[in-house]
Image 1 (cartoon, rainbow, N blue to C red):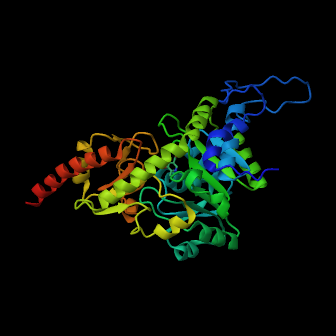
Image 2 (image 1 turned 180 degrees about the vertical axis):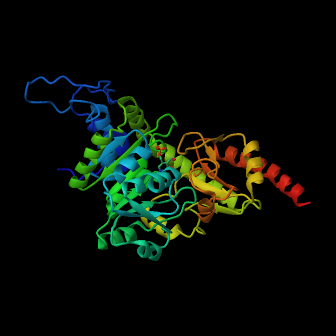
Image 3 (image 1 turned 120 degrees about the horizontal axis):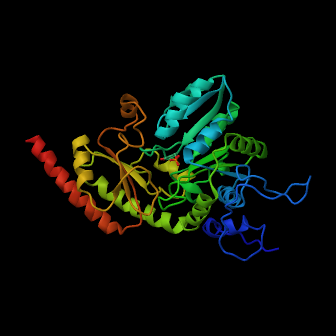
Length: 395
Ligand SMILES: Cc1ncc(COP(=O)(O)O)c(C=O)c1O
């Protein structure tokens, strides 16, 4: 028996064909099974599929792929990242309490603060860059610690191993939103996290053409419970989108490595610019989470945020930049510039936002596949115009 062990880079390309082993046609791509129902050949002995909400072969190939890439045993595909996240929260019951990072994605914030309380599930926010702050927030009824690292949009870093230890000592589950890293750069299940969640809309699919969510577990019982919720709640991913997502995953390593390399150069460039007050990027040695992130992840990723002095300077910058699209979302082949205060975090009250560093001058930049020198030249010209505006206002 050979001791050959393939790299994750190889798994990204071939895992989906392994998940498609039912019918041996030799096709290198997983077929799109556009069928809501499946003929049962025997009156009382049913086949592996009956109805596509409960199971679809194309979705299953994707689910097996993400489970393998994350080092889990069960993958589940949902209609969106927030569908995966909200379905996972349904593992909880009335009377339970969640401790959650205060720097969480705006849609998760909305679900936890506005939907779950109606079902008797309460929460407390904590600064997840500080383990003592998390510890102080745990109550006797805390059942879940919810992590997002790096967090959105300020790229705060949580020590995954430390939180897992803390959760275990309090008999709590841990969920981790791994959207910004993907399994290519961070494998939370290996560090003891219970449920890994993804907005697969982002780097995993990579082409801004799919809305999708994924959840992965290692523990069989937890996987079965979440699969039961997936089927009961029904927010599943369709076969066509499952196929697109598999295709995206195959090119993840080449896309993400190039974007991450460009992000590092852009973060360095922005750090030296007079108009930029602060750059949030875990690859900068000045980032407070630099050492922790390096320990638990193999790259700083391709998203950075930077703070301009105020809203009108940010507006001028956005209006004069030429290459990136100005849009919500991230992780596409095209660079995407966004204004979190009005976009991803619009659901968060202003006071909450500002407490988390999401000022009106903060911009988030998801680096795509354009030539990095072109991107930096574009930043340079737009920042120059914004600087002139700043000088005028100063006079
Ligand atoms: C970190 C993070 N988690 C979850 C989500 C929600 O995913 P979706 O938009 O696919 O529902 C997003 C979306 O922006 C995100 O950035």
